[in-house]
Image (cartoon, rainbow, N blue to C red; front, side, top):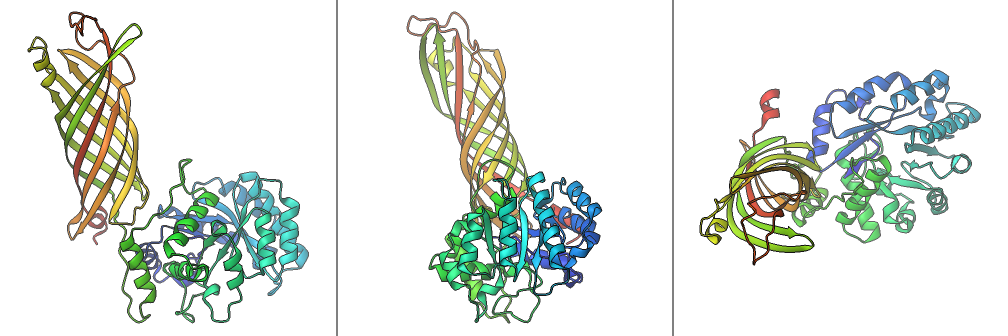
Length: 479
């Protein structure tokens, strides 16, 4: 789940901010986006966002503070929005309920935020209270096909929702949809699931059953559950689609592939159980399995497929069942990405036997730098796809063959948490591809009366890696 709007930089969290953030991540919150509301707090906000790889922020002037906006503030927003942790412009908008600033000032400040958002190719986070017509009119006048954003804490009518979607904006719901007197049921029913995001608006808008208490990002699951209930779908579907939408809007993925958060049945049941629990029993959900630095042995079987070339002719030879072994060092860059540096050794006696030992056995050594992209990092069993580069240091009849190729594959992590750290069984099907033709043996080798002087190979290695992730961060922090 992604809490797309939480003011965790506010004073309400000063006494337990670290514990509150940990509770959120323990309750399957993947990322938190902190909107900026006051220019005087931008540096504090950025420092908080930069303190954790799963925190991001927006920069803007809330309509309550519209009188504080000036050219210097807008220039500051432009400059600071270049920072990696800034994923949005806002919170900005119009609020005619409190009316802390003249209407014309609020409208002008809102319009300038939209213009900055377009200049910086960032989405805008919009606050709207009793200002439907002016909000939509200004967005429409500034919409040139590049403006995108979200109407946060939506409380409008189905008609306002449809107009916002037609203008290319997303709708996010918070704890207000769980209130007994909520009038948003029709809106939730009618809005397409891929146009919804989740938020808490912490420390405000606390959902039932905790109304009257301070809200926090860990409660975002109750909004997901209420949407699932209204739409008569599973909470898994709500979490997966809202997370996908948030990542696309805020560009949270570092590659041009969309990874949908896929919860296993066990995790889903855990979420539902946690939602239904009594508020007096604070049973925590399953903690995600963090992968910081891990290491361990590798063992598998190597199938070598050699393609021989002479002119336009080709011939394939394959050798299977070769023992392969080595070691690996891994580093969890973030929840969805694990980088692995590995070494694998394999020896081909079969080719020597095939030629009555007139040539020496082939030796294969692979140095692999691989990226493993995990689609469901919070499940006990994680599935991933692999892409990387391989340095081949092979020897064929004592002729070296050194080159750079690439590798790919599919696999899974089986996570086994203990008091001593995380143990991990990594099972994968891994293929290494050579990219260059080379002479691997000698001109004297005759293949069915044709002399094949150039070859190129690929290596299929189903393997198991036993990894240990010691609690390094806990040791350093003394926890």
